[in-house]
Length: 41
Length: 136
Image (cartoon, rainbow over all chains, first blue to last red; front, side):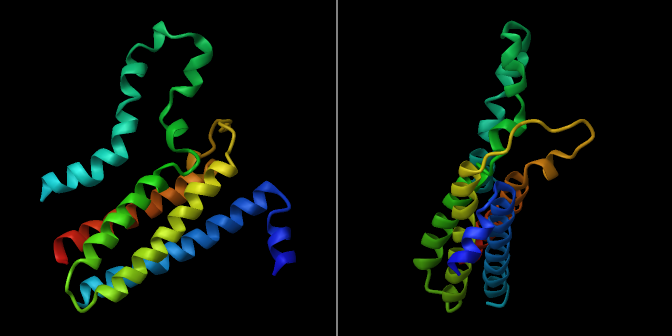
């Protein structure tokens, strides 16, 4: 885990990619959850 | 309804961009070296709109928390996920800024990944915020 994180942050480009991927997956699943609950009410 | 949307969603996102307009109008009066900074991508290139989207998430969370709907748990979890994503982009967009050297023909959306991601997240957050406000 620590080595993986270190590797991701070893250069700026990689770090950006990692952060963007995590953020978009989180945001996407959050959106689907929230909208799903709202529309299925 | 439109009033709520303008005041709570459109103004927070677009007012800073509109504030650039007076500077654009008097661009000729400003020193040459300042011109490259007075363009709209400069304001949001490192995911700055994620801060606004985070405020949407906080407000949506409050709205849904104080509602008595049966589906509020799922929405709350969704809002927390969206909020976590916005925190990541807001914080790390500032930590890893991108130089404003878009080469001719290159898309600014590709050159500034944090800007693209925050645009998507801001759109999603605004949608959830509006949905929660009118359905909760």
